[in-house]
Image (cartoon, rainbow, N blue to C red):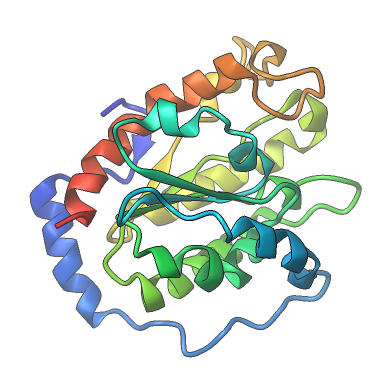
Length: 240
């Protein structure tokens, strides 16, 4: 595995973490919808999305916003790992929390892969990094309720040229979530963000399409090089 993955564990450590999960509390019920969030707006889109089914049992389920939805080469990039794309464009991190049991739980995933939070750090009134961390904790609690012993991988929020004014918040959010993952069993933070920065630490436009927000083919290849070795290792733990 590359040096950019945080929260590493070997196979023996992962098995020990599986046993430890039996002692962890789970979420008592559905999380309350925070003020300003409207997950119901995705109902019709998700009705269409869930009509697709995985080609293999226990896939790696990719959950998140448009960078997941637009990953047209996901299956080829991750082959031979079986994957299921459950991205819905424009979604925020609480949308992933709210819809987890519909989009992820039924598939009994071997690994859960999440890219969410980028749209919370946009516009004139962005969320705070600590708020996104709280929602990440909510997501973990929901996941532990229905997918109790399944590894969960968080893909770093991308620093993008179109949202450079939020760069400090992006980096701080990534730091907070990386720190959380380093201290929790079966959580992994994968630093895909550093590889998208230029020599001066600014978002590098060459990895993005013309909107300067979404990855181009080369950008997805940079993601793949960092992410795939982590998923190969965790799939061997999450799949009996």
